[in-house]
Amino acid sequence: QVQLVESGGGLVQPGGSLRLSCAATGTIFSINTMGWYRQAPGKERGLVARITRSGTTNYADSVKGRFTISRDNGKNTIYLQMNSLKPEDTAVYYCKLDEVLSAYWGQGTQVTVSS
Image (cartoon, rainbow, N blue to C red; front, side, top):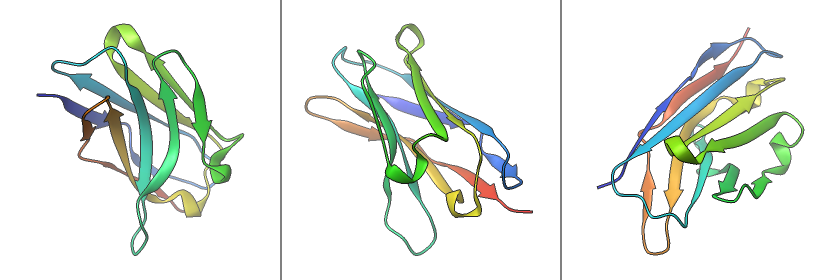
């Protein structure tokens, strides 16, 4: 069974930075994509950024140039460096692991951007 454990959320002022981490444990197939999604109150969950095992990335337009996703394949861990945070980035951030036949979600971590 795969488990995803997120960390790094919190409260930050507008313009500040946070770094999220997500570690995957269990039996993980080598062909996979990992990513970050977020859900604000009253809104649907949507993609923030994702990265393939080979390092190909894609981002939501709203975070391009501010957020950077990276991964450490040896640790089955991904990171999300979030800079120039805005109040509209406030949401619960979820980690996701996509394999060929399965998908797994983390429990989520709250990010609040407020002065």
